[in-house]
Image 1 (cartoon, helix red, strand yellow):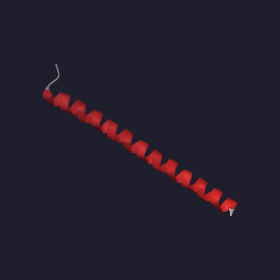
Image 2: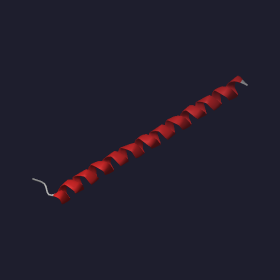
Image 3: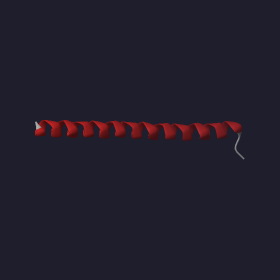
Image 4: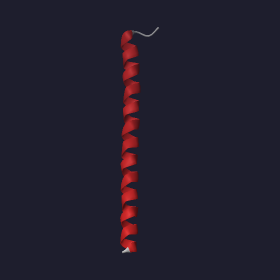
Amino acid sequence: MATEQEALKFVKQKIQKIEDLLDVMSKDKTKQNKTKQAIAITEIHTRL
């Protein structure tokens, strides 16, 4: 049976992994949005 300290350490590690994944997802989303903006700007300039 795990001690309270071990359980807390395990939970903190899981939280850190989730935070890391959210950070990666956020950066990827920002990258996607910038790409979409660049495409839209290019299309606007092409049509002018």
